[in-house]
Length: 327
Length: 294
Image (tube, rainbow over all chains, first blue to last red; front, top):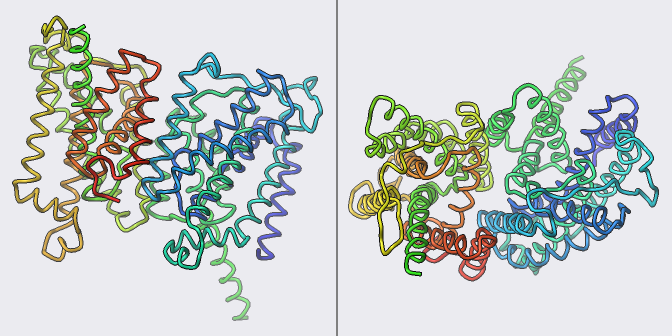
């Protein structure tokens, strides 16, 4: 990573660290969903950008994570967040293996459709098993213990803007570092080579399906963890979380932010969450504006907002350099 | 016993005939333009809502409810206007892009149309009261079948016939098939591809809007009907095979009858069963029953 990039990241991190102290309570609360979705999208984008597979059913893993948290906290009374995360990683992994074995045999539109079908299969499964999952009523998620500590004496909002905020931020940082290592490892390079030229990759001895499956499993685990983080924020899980339009929201965030950049999806979650909050406070038709925005991004700037920003940045820097040279 | 079977069969075929129209539109557009149109369910919803408006107007100026099928068809055809707008305004920019972006653009359309419908017609379910029953009920082997359902089934079969005729016997149909086979070659032979794309997309749109308009007397229009339908239409084309008209026909019949059978026998299973079949088909015959696309 370039030096300016590292400085920029550290600045953002510093801002996020002090944000609960300076920001309004509600905005800090919104930041929590930003953390959760960012973790989820790290997984999603491993598939979309680095492996070239568009999943239209990734909300399934958010569901796996969220319902795991719901079951553990409110049914089994195991409130430890770490347990939820570990169980989710395990379950997401198992689910991803089962689904992945079938899905990774296909690419492009077929992959998108198969993942959509599995997502909807899970959705109707959740709807139909009301004695287990509460059907469309959903399940409640209790406030979790963080690192073994019980914060139930705390006010709900104070919990969110205090311990839970830093906990989520910590998980996001750890997940980002892990994903950064993954995509820059030989494994990650194999994935991009499969994306760019599957025939050549296979010729070079890379087992395409095996790598795609591994990417799918890792992706599912990350998105699952994002789901666990998301669950306590809403305090409730219902099948709507797995409906295919929620998967669409995830695709939307990734694309608006910029899928081809490691940090693009994170920017996308900020844009999505802020914009939805702002627009829906004025009019209820946020989908109309979001649709128009998505169409504009797809047609005009497939690299997303982050590409526009980086282009702008280099343009300004070039201008400044040119100015210095002239003087 | 016989009447239950007849009942289930007819309600299945009724579902199937509407599904077929939407799926045929989806197939046509996919076959020629290679775009999987997630917004086809939205066209269906638009058709339903405008159908209600037209029928209400028709009844208010004293039109007999038995002829309500005319304003419904008119609503479907009027909506043809959005075909060229969407194709020229949005889709033409992404033909040479990655399939993922094409898919996402239609997803954007779906989001927009859903809210436009809410903006115009609100969020409460709407219906054309009275029209459905005005057609009366027919007694077949002791089962009571609404006559309107039969009309829709016939209308859908007629449309299927017209489509088959256009595609296999007319010059326009041959051009469509040639373009869907190899659009570069078609272009080299002097076919105006842009022109074909506009026409095909508009035709696909109209199939969807007519499907929505025809179904509406039997049910209520809701803003969720678009996203619900796309999943079914998707099941139809996957089972039948992407890009194949015959596939849309057989797929729609299968999904429609399956839906009504499972609804009658064990409603819990309804959608679950359809997804399982979709997955089984994709696993064992990913090109679908009649598909050629890979």
